[in-house]
Length: 265
Ligand SMILES: Cc1cc2nc3c(=O)[nH]c(=O)nc-3n(C[C@H](O)[C@H](O)[C@H](O)COP(=O)(O)OP(=O)(O)OC[C@H]3O[C@@H](n4cnc5c(N)ncnc54)[C@H](O)[C@@H]3O)c2cc1C
Image 1: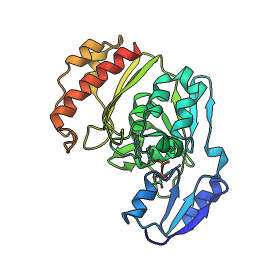
Image 2: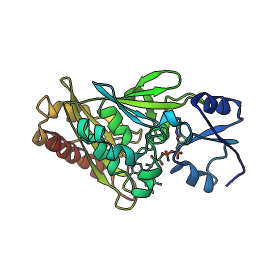
Image 3: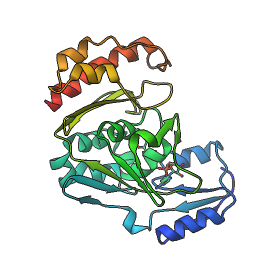
Image 4: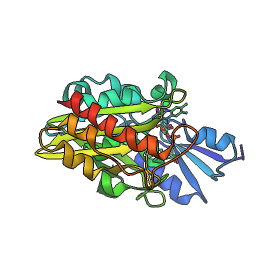
């Protein structure tokens, strides 16, 4: 680990000001990704700006048609939330299957989406459920937020403050997890909201989360699980690594979409 300055921010403004006055500042949320990265000397920020004491960044509110989750809300809190469990059970289940209890008790939704790991679960949850990402500067549809592997539309110093999820008519998430880390080898969020059907895929593509148009067409308005299973997904531009070939991931996309549709229906 290289040396860095440590600052515990007391408010959103304090955090943003500390970041902008640092040479190369990084926000620290749950630290589940950032701390191992620092330990391995893969990053060398001049300053760490800890968000733990910015109380109004954590919490869950039910705004009627949508549920808004503060950036510093942990995966465990989302998984156990009565509001999320009753209004968007697919999202509670997604959060409840991230990593292990230690990771769920420290990792946050803001840290997860800012990091945009290609195998993370929340990107599929956000795109599939047509979430809006709220920052200290603007509001962005999830589809415009996730731009590439570990890349987002966040500008230098921009702070994710919350994520707002419209309440779907039906939704479910199915994941084929890596047996060690629980990251998604392939994960698919299927959702139907106001007549629109979405299928968002994580873990599979070389450029991160994406909507599978052919799966969405097969699912149709009835979330036809059998039709989704029959879709032959192309392996072009899919990830291949020691865990799964591109062809196997292509196969898993149809299977996970079909399982999610069956569960949602
Ligand atoms: C063993 C292990 C298993 C895991 N398994 C899974 C899994 O199955 N599925 C899954 O989806 N994830 C998994 N994760 C990832 C984990 O769930 C966290 O979501 C992830 O590590 C990032 O969240 P964090 O709060 O720890 O962020 P940090 O590590 O603190 O930060 C990550 C990055 O986001 C930036 N950042 C943090 N908060 C903000 C903000 N509010 N605004 C702007 N930028 C911000 C930081 O500067 C940093 O660059 C796993 C992690 C570990 C260590």
